[in-house]
Image 1 (cartoon, each protein chain N blue to C red):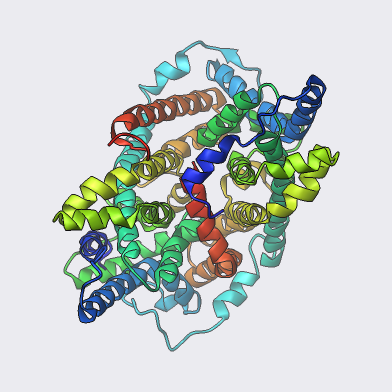
Image 2 (cartoon, chains in turn cyan, blue):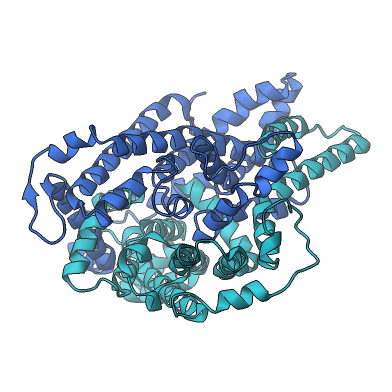
Length: 305
Length: 317
């Protein structure tokens, strides 16, 4: 494995291949392009290897995972591991865990879209006293370590008898607690021309009308990015469910996976990895379908920070 | 969403400057707070309130069942005699100090490589980004543990080159490199941001430099680095703050114990164990506030020093 060697090598390549003058001959160009693809494909192989290893192992019999067998291919590929994995753990089927994850993720998307868009409209399009102060506070929460609030939050939810329910995991989504999404939408709305609101106002439209019939339809790209990311983050969330959920019937997949690791003591390697694959499947499908949105989203939000 | 950053900065305050009637202003204030309500409520109930109570709890002894008992600064002073605490600080600082710069260096190098390509850029960009999306998940932690286990595929691959590690997961001196590789593997997110920044650099700058006979190294230090510095600043800030908060992978790989020999006892893992398995909630709150203060100071340092190395377009060069 050349994990550590490749990036340094590619750095020098990048500098050499960068911005060649137009007068260059086409053979030199072609050679550079070929070199680029060789380096990039090698790097792709390294980066994707853990994922491929995971998928390959999930179809292999236990004896062939790890050990001296490093090959991704096996003549004994089968779905056996998945059959075992679907049985679930602790008397709960994997389908149930899947449903739980889905409920939490869909709840997160709905809550975030509703609360973040409304709050972002206030920040981006309405002038009111205190706006810049609150905006500053919102930005500050972006940098706030989550751990500062979990203990008091836990105490409050515990006293309200809401531990082991989905309320603590979802309430923040409906109260725009993921400042990242509010910020994303504020930035997006600020780039929409101000004449739109002015014209609507002259026609007698209030903020509710402007928000629902002008802003929301124009914000579609931001809403899609938000949906994708809040879904994936909720789907992968581990700390929240770990803190609040006690009964396996309510576990989402990441917590179920931990239970599986604990209870089988990693004896059934194949099934454990098959379950890991199942837990990532929706994220991978999302990525394949929406990769344009996801990658574009990351690149633009980063720069606007 | 594809507008350039300069454009968004310019139009940041696009609200009309026409004088408004005070009636309109009152209506706007009401509407403003009505629309802001979800966030405001969440901010007060889920962030501000908890922050204040965790500050209070950090000066108490509290186990969730008996009422909190005021003990002043005791939690903060005992911390520095707590060997496990000091160990968790060491583990986390090591991870942040080595992992973050390596990850950003990999991200920048690959971004520059991709920026030089004419074809296939989109494919590679997506492929390299994929680990960032799943890297913090439980599934990947399980896979990482299996791959870096005793005679796992990583060891097998290395022994091919004559390197014998003999298992990373159970070896206290190899767990940190394993976690650093896990974070470097997720170089895709900062890379995508670097790549977007590289595309904003006008090509004629490089052409002019070429005509003046500047080589690739000079071009990098005199054009690429200064032009890219706001993006470096953003990535450095975000990645540092995130690195301090690593939790799930540490929990899964060490079975929630931080072993072997405390070598994976990351700060947040120890905080979790103190708070939710020992029910030392006062102590855990003090740890949380210390983390907040340290991250705050670090943010401030990054912001302050940024004045000397970050150039925004429009500045005198």
